[in-house]
Amino acid sequence: MDRPAHAHPRRPLRRQAVSGAGISAARRRLPRVVRRGQDGQAQGQPATVDRTVRRRPRIPRSAVIRLDIDPDRIDPRAIRRAVAVLHDGGVAAYPTDTVYALGCALEARKATEKIYRVKKMDRHHRLALICPDVATAAQFGHFTRDAYRLARRLLPGPYTFVVPATADVPRTVLDRKRRQVGLRVPNHPIALALARELGRPLLTTSAGATLDDTLTAYGTAVDVAIDGGPTLGEPSTVLRVDADGVEVLREGAGPIDW
Image (cartoon, rainbow, N blue to C red):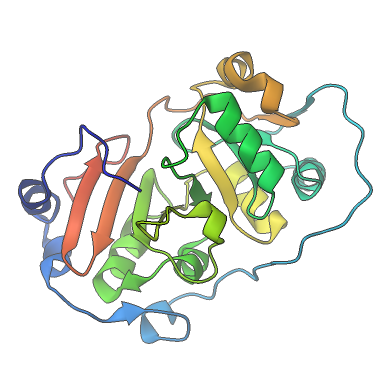
């Protein structure tokens, strides 16, 4: 993931980002990386990751399937119906704690291409992964001890953590020059329920402030649309976190005055 043109210089922002008492440790250059089975992850067990490609009868779809789901009363049947479309290689429009997003199953290459095409995105712009919890995120990204503690503190929440990718992230998702991945654990029950039921992260990108905005702009690529009500309408705060500390790549809905 290349740094956006408007990203701030690393050092000044690191001083700002780590000014809080709980973040001073993030400055330390601790080479230790929290991987599966190390004590940084002992605080929580990851959701079971399903890496199988489901071969199901293709669901005929002549129009977008629209589902109304109350975030405060999740309907498991509606979630399962949406996930069946994702297993079938479809694209979902769904709400997060920031904006509505377009997402697909991690291994769904055709769906991934549809998202890139409809959003007219450069291939260097990599999609993020929506995970059901921090422990699952740590299966797909290498977190230093301090980065993991920071993630446990801020997530679920409106942040994207950019960290070195593990071998579990498909090569097609990564930039060849920079093997990093953006990981999200949004504070939204619908997004978390989708990732949990899917059994692996959702490959995702931001879309619109409302579902109608999303369908107006990108509806040609959407197979199932979930209306979960209003969102903040502001993108997530993007943090690059590594052994050198914390760098704010984009200021968004998540505050940086920790």
